[in-house]
Length: 483
Image 1: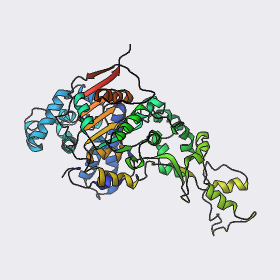
Image 2: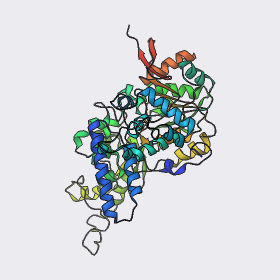
Image 3: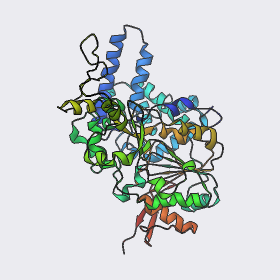
Image 4: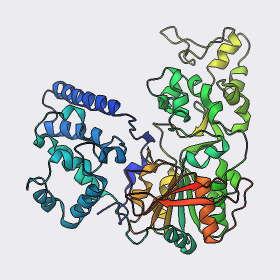
C-alpha cells in the first residue's frame, strides 16, 4: 500500500531534520561515486563477512540515487535517453509493469541498461565506466523501483486555467513554503549559488556550510552559529506579497494549514493564525537554554544575536550569582570542578565572575537544527488532521531538499492535485502544474486571473508573460514584461 493510501507513514516524518544530498557539478558527482565505491569496499573488509555483499551494494546504489541531478543536462548528454524517450519509457513501465518492461527493453536488446538508467533521471556513475552492461542492472533496478513508488501526475490538470479553477473551487488548501517566499525582502535563501547563505558561509572553514545548523556542532561551539545568526535574523516584521497571498487564502476560508520551513516568523506577522501555522523548523520567536530549558522571547537576546555574541541564560547566571562570594565548588575526585563543564574555545573569559558566567547555559533560538526532531505538532497535524481533509497542495519557494518536510507531498493522498511555484523546477517530484519564476510575480498573476485583490505595497500592475516550456505539458515560466 502506497504512502497516502491508508498507511501511517510515521517514522520518516518523526525523524530528525536531514539535508538531502545536492551535488552541483559533474566532477563532484564523479568523485562521490568513486568514493562511494571505495567506502563500500572498506565496509566489506571491515565486516569480515558480517554483512552481505548485497547489503553493501544496495547502500552504494542508494547513494548514487540520492544525487540530485539536472534532468535537462542528463537527457541532453551523449548516450542518454532524450526527454521525450524518457517520458515514453516511464509511461510504458507503469502500463505494463516491471517484468514485462525489462523483457521488452533490456532483455530484447532494444536498449542497454546503462542508457535505460538515464530514462529514470540517473546519470551513470563514474566508477562504472568501462564495465559490462550487466554491471548497471542493480542501479537500474533501484531506479525502476523508485519510479514506481513516485506519485503519478494527475493527467487532468495541465494549464494555468486549471490552476485558477483549482484555487477557485478548493476549500482545504495545504501550503508548504520555503525560503523563496522571503527573498524579495532581502532575506537570503540557503542554496542559491553565489547569493545563498551556504555560499556566503564557505569562508568559515567548515567541511560543509550546513554544519552551522548541526546540533552537535552547536553544543560543541555555539559561537559558529552566533557568528552568522545576524545574517538570517529577520530585521523587521515586513512580509512579502506571497505571505499576503497565504493570508488571503486564510481570509477566504480556503487555508487548511501553512507548513513553513522558514524560521523568520514572517507568517505570523502576515496574520496567519497560530492554529493554521506549523513552523516545521521552528523560528526565532523564542529561545531556550540548552542546560536548564528556561525559555524567553527572542527579543531578550536580540542584541547578542545581532552582535554575533553567544547569549547566556539569565536564570543560570542568577543561580550562579546566588552563591556567596569566595564560595568554592566541591571538586570531584579527579580534581575537576564537578559542576563546571569543560571550557570550550568560545569561553575565553579571564576573571572569576566571567568564568562562572561562561558555564551558564547557552540560549539556543528555537529553530530546528539538523539532528533534532521536528515538533510533534508537525506530524500530528499532517497525519491526524490534514491528510483526510486536503483538496489542493501548493508548494511555494522550496526545493524540497530537507527531510522529513520533503516527504509531505508523498504522504498526502495521490488523487489530491499538487501545484509547484518556485524559481527552479523540483525534478524529483511529479507535480501536476509547475509555475516557475519569482514567487511574488506568480501569486499576483494567479490572483489577477482568479479575480482576487491581493493587497500589498509591493504588488504592481505589471504585465506578466506566461509561456509553456518546451518539452513539457504543464510547466510554465512567468516573467514580467518590461515596458
